[in-house]
Image (tube, rainbow, N blue to C red):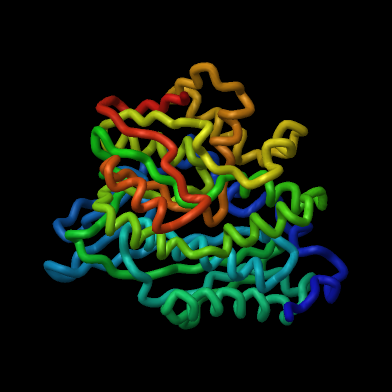
Length: 346
């Protein structure tokens, strides 16, 4: 049983200026900052910052490489243990997106100690530890600071065989695109923060955010995928556009095939859209051909996700088997062709 936020007299989400991964720096601003930072080349650095991939990968032997990543964010729900579970699952997802397995993780904590009781923090950490046990990796210490806005996440170290590494630059002309979780989490968590989310939608969003991407990574590897990413703060359009540009291809999305959480379209139409999703939409605008699709469709595809699913490219004759193995809501949502990094909606 989780400790109630009533101990503090305030809801956890009242302390958050945004919703989860929607709190990320705007993608255009982030690209500008990172573009000014020089990263030295090294023969053992298999994946660095060149393509904005999900994690860094460092070779330590011919058949072994370390995968290192970190992620943390503000509360997306009011239940402390559930927030801990979501944040931990979101952080470790980057390792799965690279085709790896997590080895261990460290906690990252910012906590308003004068406003929120330590019992709540203990519940957050307990939620993270649960995800570690379920995923087979221990949480061993970490770092904390006193901060007016609570934040939680992990620094994760994993490993991968370089021969089976998945990157966001690995899409191939002719690949089918497989998405493994439904979109709409950003809209749902914004409604949760506002207190307007229908109970069924809140429950579905939480179930999605706490679901592991380990099975999706296994299915991608088994199907022979080489290109993959997880869909988080930059939305499907943002992450797919980065993949397409890094891979030297164009991507076409069959919008009708994309799975969404029930109820998010109505909420978005009524104006419940996180600021991060709108920033994503503006950022990808020069690279997206909406075709006949309405602006609401484009905005939904740009929705900033927290602990979203994997998106991977695989030969068309193996895509159906991967989807069948994973089950709903996994779906084939599009295809890849030679190009220059554009995303076309159909």
